[in-house]
Each structure stands twice: as structure tokens, then as C-alpha cells.
Image (cartoon, rainbow, N blue to C red; front, side):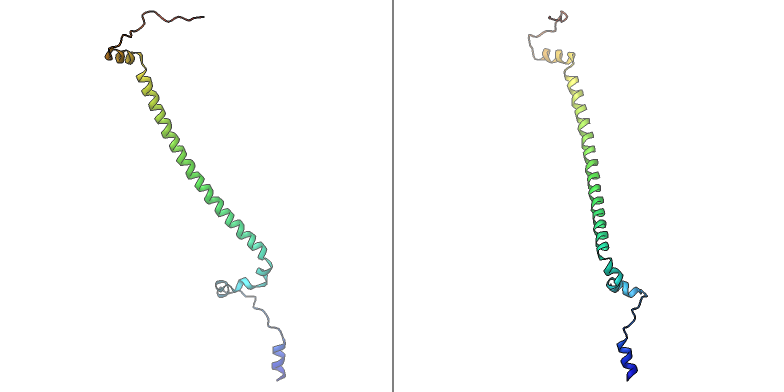
Length: 117
């Protein structure tokens, strides 16, 4: 009987060997090492989450920049088209043609313009 009592009195040795079952089951998180490093692990997790969020936000901004660049290119081409149409309509020959079709009394000047000082 005494040998049995001695076995109960001695503390059990902890198994330092980590098995796949303890990792998958989550028993590894209850070890002394992970208890001591809890704050560090939480900090690492927060930094990982921040990194993922930062990358996602950067990708969204890159998509927005590309969309705005395409829109700017389209607007530039539209402005160029309108500018060329305006140049075509304001050409002197076009204006003279327009005036002659409207039966107006306006005529092209025969004297060159001069500068008033």
C-alpha cells in the first residue's frame, strides 16, 4: 500500500513531446510557453490583421486610381473632339457660308484691321 501512496504523492511529469493530436486539439495553447507569451501572440495577431487590412485598402485605392485614370483619358479625348469641332465651326470660310445661307446683310471686311492706340 505504501508504494501506491508514494506514487500518488509524487507530481506527474509533464509530457514535453508535442504530438499532432495536441496541436490540432488545441492542447498546445495551454502549455506554459504559450501562457507566458500571450501578450506577444496577441500583438502579432493584431499586426497581421493590420497588415491584411492595409493591403486590402491599398488594392482598393489602386483600383480607384485606375478607374479615374481611364475616366480622365476619356474626358481628355472628349475635350479634344469638342475643341476640333469648335475650330471647324469657327473657321472663316464656314462662317461666311453660314451667313450667306441665312440671307444676312453682313459681309466680309475688305479693309485689313488696324490697331487703335
